[in-house]
Image (cartoon, rainbow, N blue to C red):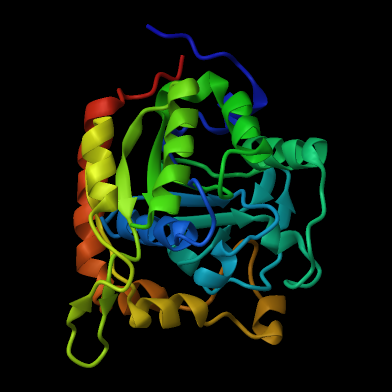
Length: 302
C-alpha cells in the first residue's frame, strides 16, 4: 500500500479522487473554454458528481467570467478559503481563481515567480474543497512557473494527477503542443488524451461545418505520439456567446450572498447543453472518464 506524504496540500486534497490538468502549448487555442466545458460535463455526468475547477492562469484568469461568477468575493472560514459555487446551494461545482481576489476584474497581475508559487501553494493547501470526484485545473499556456509549482506542490498526490492537452489544427499550435507533451513526459504525468479545438466552424444558420483553418492535425499528432485522440471541436458561435456573456449577480445580490454561495439556479449548464458543441464534448468527457478509470487507481488515504 502506497503511503502518501503528509503535507498541507496532501491533507487538503485527500478527498479529491481525480485531478485533471488542462494544458496547451500556446495561448488562443481555447484551453479555458475546454476546461469550463470539462467541468460542466463532469458535473452533469452523474446525479452525485462533485467537481472543482481551479484557475491557475494567474495573469489571465477567465474561468470566473465563463461561469458567470465575476465579482464574487472569496470568504475565509476557520477551515480555509471557501470556494465559489457556480451552482449555488447544490454546491457540486466549486470554483477558485485569482480573479476573485482582484479589486477590479480589469486589474493586471504583475507577479514574479516566487509570488506565483506562493499563490498556487495557497490555492492547493488553503481552499476548502471538501470531497470532490474531480478537480479540473486550468493552467496558463506553455510550460511555465505555474506548471512547475503545481507539480512540485502536488508531488504527494502525483498518482491522482493526469493531463488533457488542447491544440488547434495549425502547424504552429501542434509544434507547441509537442512541448507541452514533453513536459508531461518529463514529469511522469499520464496524458488522458488530446483535444483538437477550433476544428472548423459551425454555421449558425444551417449547422454546416466549414474548415476555416485546417483539420486533422491533432488526430495525426495523437496517432504519431501514441496518445488517445479525444475528439475535435468546431468554432461554435452559440458557445462563444454563452461563455462570454455568462450572467453574474448584480452588486446588490453579491453583497447579500451567503458564504461561498450563489443565489441563481444553475441555468448555465442548461443553456450549455443546448449548444451544438455540448453533444460533441459529451463524447470527449466520456472518453476522459474511460481513460481515468484505466490510468489511475483509487487514491489511498493512508
